[in-house]
Amino acid sequence: MTFSQSPPSYTTRAPPTVCCSVLSALVLLHFISTLPAQSTVPTKQTHLNMDKTATDITLTCHPELSSNVIRIRYSVSNTGKSDIYLLDIFPGYDAETRKPFADFHSYYLCLRDGATAYLLKGIPPLPANKTVMVRIMPLGTKLEPGQQIDRTFEVSLPLCEQSPWYYPKLPPEAYKPIEIHRLVFAVQFLRSSIEGFVATPAPHDSGLFRVAGKYTVGQTETLLSELKIPPMKFLTRTDRFSRL
Image 1 (cartoon, rainbow, N blue to C red):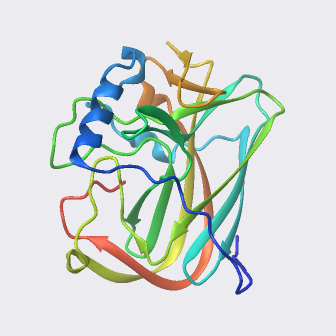
Image 2 (image 1 turned 30 degrees about the horizontal axis):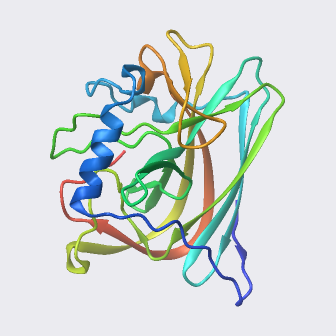
């Protein structure tokens, strides 16, 4: 899939401003820790499922490239026989208002295979250099057979490795610039037919659910779309960043 060029007057909509202080991080951890046990995943699970691609669920993607962002419009269609839950929205918590919110903007991004960037809307990998008490799990959006859902989000340029739930931004000198030639976009989902499936309404927004299975990470499936891009700058992290 190739990029279309946005007109010069293209503007972006900034995501909601959220307090990112140490206090807010602690409040968020406390909030997440109160979630039901079904929303957590044992840390021994791996992401071997990343290349398990569905055939009855389809992903179409329409990227637009401007001078400072890549705007990605994508659609997911359920042509299968059972409900699925799309895992592309993250739980957020605003420390100022003390209310949860649905985070449509965040994503995981890493370098893969030398000159490929891997952009994920799904379960981010656990950090390699620390132990976490509660794993960050996306919220689920129900998609019944025959239904389609459309989303839009933006990725800032230059592309930069990130997993904002586990890794803070580094100072500019701590990134290593390279050139990439491919961008792979991935979206994950769970089927309602998996063993041990549970879905409970989430307080972050209407129509969102906390979802889990008996082996949640291993039961997750992935939709992939390769986006053909011109050679562009990519900033890799020099710390112990978890890559997929």
